[in-house]
Length: 356
Image (cartoon, rainbow, N blue to C red):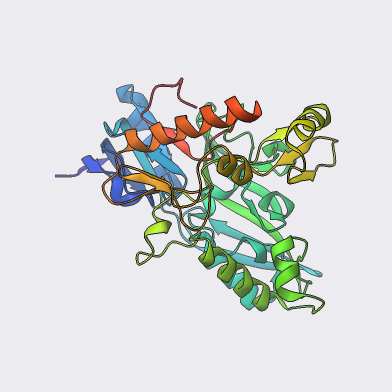
């Protein structure tokens, strides 16, 4: 039986299975679980955890998390605030979305109204509240480019606050939310600035090939991105076993120009992107394949997607332990061959802190 907590009547449930709430479909139960549908309930959830000395984990859409088979011995809070507020400021649209809104629904909402800025981020699973944490990016766009501010509950100060884009400390797949201030803030809403009637972003090679010399509109770019992602099983589809994953499991590693020169001298042409700061971004998928993990690789109940080297998939009845074991093997063999360490994208919950 769920119990009510606080004046906001936050319902606290016990021993809630977490695997069904994730895209990987692995992991054990939460000792306690709550869904916050208001800012007040976020505060109530934090108070519940603090009063009992419980660890607290914030779960979004479950698309970027691996939960241990033992589950989580604390409070799992799912932020389910809903709503979108829009105002026009000259040629830009300022859009605030609550953290519980589905990200791809927000992208579709914007594209249908011809507001540019997030069209290349179509098809990414998860909630709005999750996208600033990792500075989600794909096909030539990052959310940091359009985020104006993030409204959060500050667990240290025990109050809500507004963080500007600069204060969020965005970098490649990083922010203060998953780095130096990890676990401090709970995101309640995100405000974006989009270009009314703006042109779509066509910088990624896959999109350039798709459209050639033709200049598409926003809707055409969104559909093209969805087609490309579906071909790679990067759109969640119950009928596609390759989509039982967290998407890209590893970040593209970034190395110095000197390290890249040494790598190229030994291995010949290595696919890469030159970064503005002089460093070089490698393609993790290329490294993984050449380390001995081709598409379709399988080991027991886990494997590599037949459509994308970066996706570790649950082949049916995988355990979290098996997922992590394959992760470890990939990291070790890439490091042995290329002297490059791959960093996972998903958050590992309930595991020993030494597992990275």
